[in-house]
Length: 186
Image (tube, rainbow, N blue to C red; front, side, top):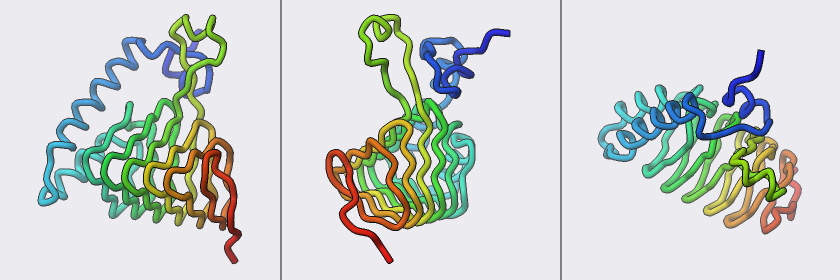
Protein backbone atom coordinates (compact mmCIF):
# COMPACT_ATOMS: atom_id res chain seq x y z
CA UNK A 1 0.00 0.00 0.00
CA UNK A 2 1.36 3.40 -0.98
CA UNK A 3 2.14 5.90 1.78
CA UNK A 4 0.05 9.03 2.19
CA UNK A 5 1.76 12.39 1.76
CA UNK A 6 1.51 12.86 5.55
CA UNK A 7 3.22 9.51 6.14
CA UNK A 8 5.97 10.51 3.70
CA UNK A 9 6.34 13.88 5.43
CA UNK A 10 6.74 12.30 8.87
CA UNK A 11 9.14 9.67 7.47
CA UNK A 12 11.47 12.38 6.14
CA UNK A 13 10.70 11.50 2.51
CA UNK A 14 9.80 13.83 -0.34
CA UNK A 15 6.14 14.82 -0.03
CA UNK A 16 3.60 17.23 -1.50
CA UNK A 17 2.42 19.84 1.01
CA UNK A 18 -0.60 20.69 -1.13
CA UNK A 19 -2.12 17.28 -0.40
CA UNK A 20 -5.79 17.62 0.70
CA UNK A 21 -5.18 15.90 4.07
CA UNK A 22 -2.25 18.22 4.87
CA UNK A 23 -4.17 21.28 3.70
CA UNK A 24 -7.06 20.35 6.01
CA UNK A 25 -4.71 19.85 8.97
CA UNK A 26 -2.98 23.17 8.27
CA UNK A 27 -6.35 24.91 8.02
CA UNK A 28 -7.37 23.44 11.40
CA UNK A 29 -4.12 24.72 12.94
CA UNK A 30 -4.59 28.15 11.34
CA UNK A 31 -8.07 28.44 12.84
CA UNK A 32 -6.84 27.47 16.31
CA UNK A 33 -3.89 29.87 16.00
CA UNK A 34 -6.19 32.73 14.98
CA UNK A 35 -8.21 32.14 18.15
CA UNK A 36 -5.07 31.77 20.26
CA UNK A 37 -3.37 34.87 18.93
CA UNK A 38 -6.56 36.90 19.58
CA UNK A 39 -6.61 36.02 23.30
CA UNK A 40 -5.42 38.30 26.08
CA UNK A 41 -3.20 37.49 29.04
CA UNK A 42 -6.35 37.38 31.22
CA UNK A 43 -7.66 34.44 29.16
CA UNK A 44 -5.08 31.94 30.44
CA UNK A 45 -7.44 28.95 30.67
CA UNK A 46 -8.74 29.57 27.13
CA UNK A 47 -5.14 29.70 25.88
CA UNK A 48 -4.37 26.38 27.57
CA UNK A 49 -7.47 24.75 26.03
CA UNK A 50 -6.49 25.89 22.55
CA UNK A 51 -2.89 24.68 22.97
CA UNK A 52 -4.15 21.31 24.28
CA UNK A 53 -6.21 20.95 21.11
CA UNK A 54 -3.41 22.21 18.86
CA UNK A 55 -0.35 20.31 20.11
CA UNK A 56 0.30 16.58 19.96
CA UNK A 57 1.24 16.82 23.66
CA UNK A 58 1.29 19.76 26.02
CA UNK A 59 2.94 19.62 29.42
CA UNK A 60 1.77 21.46 32.52
CA UNK A 61 2.47 25.15 33.06
CA UNK A 62 3.05 26.02 29.41
CA UNK A 63 3.16 29.71 28.54
CA UNK A 64 3.36 30.85 24.92
CA UNK A 65 3.04 34.60 24.39
CA UNK A 66 1.15 35.52 21.19
CA UNK A 67 1.73 35.86 18.38
CA UNK A 68 2.70 32.23 17.87
CA UNK A 69 2.71 30.34 14.58
CA UNK A 70 3.09 26.72 13.49
CA UNK A 71 2.16 24.55 10.50
CA UNK A 72 0.12 21.79 12.14
CA UNK A 73 0.72 21.85 15.89
CA UNK A 74 -0.14 18.16 16.11
CA UNK A 75 3.51 17.25 15.55
CA UNK A 76 4.71 19.27 18.57
CA UNK A 77 5.27 17.34 21.82
CA UNK A 78 6.11 19.72 24.65
CA UNK A 79 7.13 18.89 28.21
CA UNK A 80 6.32 20.77 31.41
CA UNK A 81 7.16 24.43 32.01
CA UNK A 82 7.64 25.45 28.37
CA UNK A 83 7.94 29.21 27.96
CA UNK A 84 7.93 30.80 24.50
CA UNK A 85 8.10 34.57 24.24
CA UNK A 86 6.62 36.80 21.51
CA UNK A 87 6.76 35.79 17.86
CA UNK A 88 8.01 32.22 18.06
CA UNK A 89 7.49 29.93 15.05
CA UNK A 90 7.53 26.14 14.81
CA UNK A 91 7.38 24.64 11.32
CA UNK A 92 6.29 21.20 12.50
CA UNK A 93 6.20 19.26 9.23
CA UNK A 94 7.98 16.56 11.22
CA UNK A 95 8.07 15.79 14.93
CA UNK A 96 9.30 18.43 17.38
CA UNK A 97 10.05 17.11 20.88
CA UNK A 98 10.62 19.80 23.50
CA UNK A 99 11.74 18.75 26.98
CA UNK A 100 10.81 20.12 30.39
CA UNK A 101 11.81 23.61 31.51
CA UNK A 102 12.61 24.97 28.04
CA UNK A 103 12.80 28.76 27.65
CA UNK A 104 12.56 30.40 24.24
CA UNK A 105 13.23 34.14 23.92
CA UNK A 106 11.34 36.26 21.35
CA UNK A 107 11.33 35.18 17.72
CA UNK A 108 12.88 31.75 18.17
CA UNK A 109 12.30 29.76 14.99
CA UNK A 110 12.19 25.96 14.94
CA UNK A 111 12.18 24.58 11.38
CA UNK A 112 11.68 20.91 10.58
CA UNK A 113 10.76 21.82 6.98
CA UNK A 114 13.20 22.30 4.13
CA UNK A 115 13.37 22.11 0.35
CA UNK A 116 15.47 19.86 -1.89
CA UNK A 117 18.82 21.33 -2.92
CA UNK A 118 18.51 20.09 -6.51
CA UNK A 119 16.44 22.59 -8.55
CA UNK A 120 14.95 19.86 -10.74
CA UNK A 121 13.47 18.12 -7.67
CA UNK A 122 12.52 21.41 -5.99
CA UNK A 123 10.54 22.44 -9.08
CA UNK A 124 8.29 19.38 -8.65
CA UNK A 125 6.86 21.07 -5.53
CA UNK A 126 8.01 18.28 -3.25
CA UNK A 127 9.37 19.18 0.16
CA UNK A 128 11.25 17.49 3.01
CA UNK A 129 11.17 17.61 6.81
CA UNK A 130 13.44 16.24 9.55
CA UNK A 131 12.60 15.94 13.28
CA UNK A 132 13.98 18.23 15.97
CA UNK A 133 14.61 17.35 19.61
CA UNK A 134 15.24 19.93 22.31
CA UNK A 135 16.29 18.47 25.68
CA UNK A 136 15.36 19.45 29.22
CA UNK A 137 16.43 22.73 30.85
CA UNK A 138 17.38 24.38 27.56
CA UNK A 139 17.42 28.14 27.05
CA UNK A 140 17.26 29.42 23.46
CA UNK A 141 18.11 33.10 22.93
CA UNK A 142 16.16 35.57 20.81
CA UNK A 143 16.06 35.19 17.04
CA UNK A 144 17.82 31.83 17.17
CA UNK A 145 17.01 29.45 14.32
CA UNK A 146 16.94 25.69 14.94
CA UNK A 147 17.35 23.90 11.60
CA UNK A 148 15.87 20.56 10.45
CA UNK A 149 17.17 17.36 12.01
CA UNK A 150 18.92 19.03 14.96
CA UNK A 151 19.08 17.73 18.54
CA UNK A 152 19.96 20.06 21.41
CA UNK A 153 21.09 18.30 24.61
CA UNK A 154 19.89 18.86 28.17
CA UNK A 155 21.03 21.91 30.18
CA UNK A 156 22.29 23.74 27.11
CA UNK A 157 22.07 27.44 26.29
CA UNK A 158 21.84 28.61 22.68
CA UNK A 159 22.89 32.25 22.25
CA UNK A 160 20.72 34.92 20.68
CA UNK A 161 20.87 35.07 16.90
CA UNK A 162 22.41 31.61 16.57
CA UNK A 163 21.75 29.37 13.60
CA UNK A 164 21.85 25.77 14.82
CA UNK A 165 22.67 23.56 11.82
CA UNK A 166 24.06 20.52 13.65
CA UNK A 167 23.51 18.72 16.95
CA UNK A 168 24.60 20.52 20.09
CA UNK A 169 25.47 18.29 23.09
CA UNK A 170 24.23 18.62 26.65
CA UNK A 171 25.75 20.96 29.25
CA UNK A 172 27.21 23.58 26.93
CA UNK A 173 26.78 27.18 25.86
CA UNK A 174 26.74 27.49 22.09
CA UNK A 175 26.32 30.53 19.90
CA UNK A 176 26.95 31.97 16.45
CA UNK A 177 26.24 31.33 12.80
CA UNK A 178 26.84 28.51 12.44
CA UNK A 179 26.26 27.74 16.11
CA UNK A 180 29.33 26.35 17.89
CA UNK A 181 30.23 25.47 21.46
CA UNK A 182 31.92 28.30 23.38
CA UNK A 183 31.74 26.88 26.91
CA UNK A 184 31.34 23.52 28.65
CA UNK A 185 29.31 23.54 31.87
CA UNK A 186 30.33 21.55 34.93
